[in-house]
Length: 236
Image (tube, rainbow, N blue to C red; front, side, top):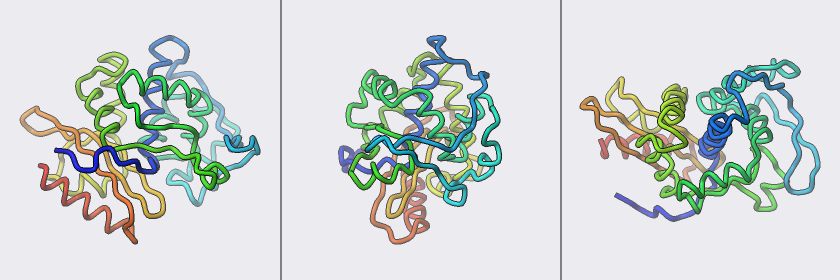
């Protein structure tokens, strides 16, 4: 069932899923290791003009990571924080590590031609210049469908990424409309006026399905979450 599936939206934090896929592809190729140490930093380069910018802990859903600046953490720890806590700081460190072009190359292999991952988050100069990460519901559906069919990189890599997505800590969208205890491997995304949720829903009988909901225009995030929960209940 599709509705406005090719309409382009600001991706918000749903772009963190393609970034995770890029990391696991590099790990599978032997370029990276999930246990390799990565230095935590808060200094990034704008894709707009090359100027430097930093993130603020009070605007991040994972402020605890800022206490680790200057230290090293395993790459997998940062990947999990990027997905489960939706850490912006972890995202910027990782996307600088892997590079947006490699992420886009993998998206093309999956067939997600209309998703665009250009940069990390909170690059204000790029944002105001219209250089934004974008997606469509259809492209996110293709990504999660490939994950559910264990076709992303390898069955083992797909299973590992689904396990990470199952640890999602922001569950006021799709999971809120499903029976308590339902397993949902999903990723949320929100900025002002934008609220998304997308993932795999696992039913008790062993079947599963993909649900992607992209919204914009709600005055309050809670209103969007209530609508997403109602859609999740209807699809269930």
